[in-house]
View: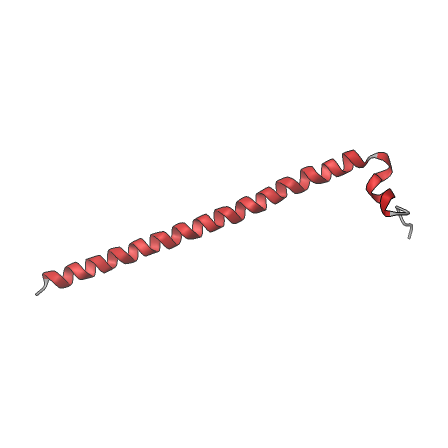
Length: 73
C-alpha cells in the first residue's frame, strides 16, 4: 500500500489544489449541516404543535364533560 501524502501539510495542500478541494468539501458539508439543523428545528416545531393540539382537545373534552354534568341535575 502506498501512502498518498508524506505529511499533514502535504495533505492539507492537496498537491496545489487545496483551494478547490476544500471549497468543494465546504460546499458539501455546509448544506448538509443546514439540512440537519432545519430538520431538527422543524421536528421540534411539529412536536410542539402536536402537544398544543392535544392539550386543546383535552381542554375541549373536559369542557364538554363539565357542561354535561352541570346540565343534568
